[in-house]
Image (cartoon, rainbow, N blue to C red; front, side, top):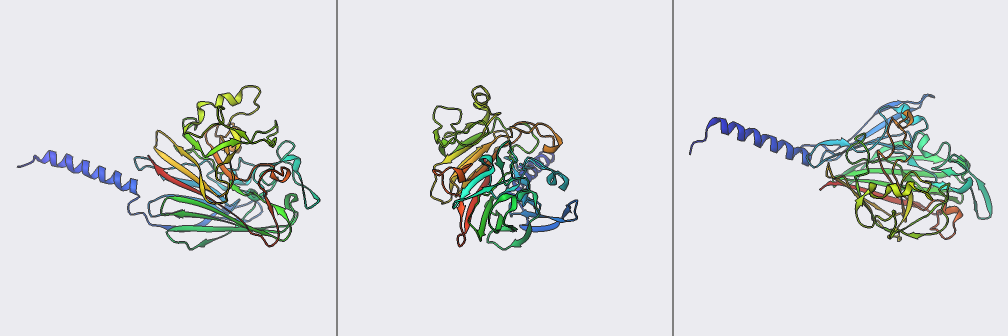
Length: 380
């Protein structure tokens, strides 16, 4: 049977379009690689380098040595269209100012320590106070505000960069010379891994995490209140009006804190803004079901319009859900507004050095601190 030429052309065009779409969705012809370039210089002349990791499917991750910071994660939506699904800045100057920890490696201690004080082995230690009356995310110049050394490292089925630095005894008030590394790995299975390691010459406390702000619809696309979230946690950690734990581990069932089944982040966020609550939204640590130190599922997120999904696995006992409550449209936050992103900070619990019933964050000489978190990206 003869087919008219115009129909052949239409069919050919449709086939080409579908092939292109399918190819984009699969990341066809993508070349797995790692590149390094100069990102900029600090005011005192330090060179800050950028590493770009690309896997065989076309996913791309960008990192800079300042703050061992994750500046971009590009993943495809259900139609194969790539977008950066994090918040951040286009230039180094944004990261060297006091910003909302966009993509930062946080340490020595992620989250808060009450009044910037703790006692270890009978000795009192006083830390920098930078969040009301408390110490937050390592202090005034924590791990997010220093330039790290970095090098590409070989891994199977992926690309990886190892960042390292020595935190001197007394830095921000912490005891011990701490040797620290964090390795970022982008695998060909569309996983982004954070591997933390540290050793010390004096007893100290440590609780490292990453503070990436996620929006699976694409950074700058609006609020995240329609994102669907599941947290593998039956309990959460209530806090006082300065966000310090009371010591209670409270059940989530029957409260606005319950994400044991997947539902929209915005479904009950308004409840947290009513008296007697003092929050502007979710900024709470959850007690994960997995408490063995093994890598286990902590969270799953889905963005309905793009179809993008993200699963989070961790060896940590807790995860902090934060929904950009303090983004206020100011330049310090790159003009992003409240609830335009969420953070899932895997960690030990806040104020653990002052809470004997919480899992210990003490690291002693001869021991090695190890922690791993994995983000797995997909579409549904």
